[in-house]
Figure 1 (cartoon, rainbow, N blue to C red):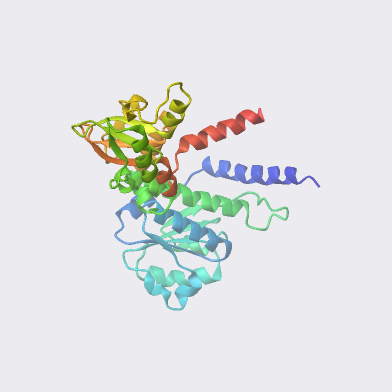
Figure 2: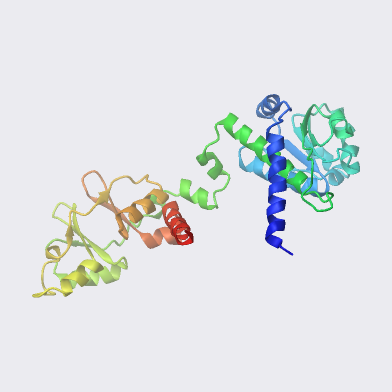
Length: 337
C-alpha cells in the first residue's frame, strides 16, 4: 500500500474543495463583517460533534484576533448556559447537515430574543439555514474519506471559512501585530513585540574601569562582572572603549605582552554604542546578530553609560530572532538541492 499516494490524494481532494468554495462565494460577507464589527456584544460559536470541535477552534481564532468570542456547546446551553448569550450578542451556529438535533433545539430560544444568527451548513433549505439571518454555505462535493462519509473535506472547509471570517474582521479593524501580541503576552510574538531592551538592561554593578587601569586589575573586574568584558570610561564618564575576553586572548598571543600595561592599549576603542533605551528586545538581538557581538552597550546622547545587555540575557528571556531561523531554513533548502 502506497501511503504517500494516499496522503497526496487526501490533500489534493481537500485543496480542490477549498478552491471550489473560493470560486463561488455567494454569502453576504460584507454585511456579516459589519454586523460583527458594530455589535456591542460577543460572537458566540456553537455546534456539536466535529462541527463543535471546529467551532471551538474558530472561537479561539476570533478571540485572539480582536473579536470577543467563546464557544458554547448546545447541550450545555439547554441545561442553563443559554443565559450566557446576551441580547447584544451574535451567534455563529455550525452544523454540516443543518439538522443536528441538539443545535436545532436551542434555535427557537435564540431567535426569541432577536439575537442575530449566522449559520454554516451545506444546505440553504436546512432547518438551521431557515432560522438564520445569514447563511454561509460549506457544502463539499467529496469528503477525503474513502467512504465519502467521515467529515474531512467538510471540516477543512468549515475551519477555512472561520479563518476567512477572522481575517476579514482583522482587516476591517486594521488589526496589527502589536494588537495580536497583546492577546498573546506569554507567546514568542508577545515577547518580540512587548519586551523592551530597558526591561532586560543591566544597570547595577557594571564592569567599568578607567583608561589608566592596569590590565591585571581590569581582568579582576571582568571576572567579577561575569559579562566577559569591561567598559572603559574617560575622566568625563564617557565610554571610550571595551575590553573583551577576545581582546585579551589576542593580546596574549603578541610578543612583548605585559599584564601591567594600561587596559586602553589592548582594548577596542570607540566601540559601537546605542542610545535608544526604548529599543525592543527583539531588535536588540537583531543588532547583536548583525554585528556579531555579544554585548550591547547602551549610553545616553553624551556616550555616558546607561546599561549593558548580553546576548545570554536575551536568550534567557526567550527572545528569538527570525534571521537565525531563516538562515537555518536556507541551509536546509540548499542541502536538499
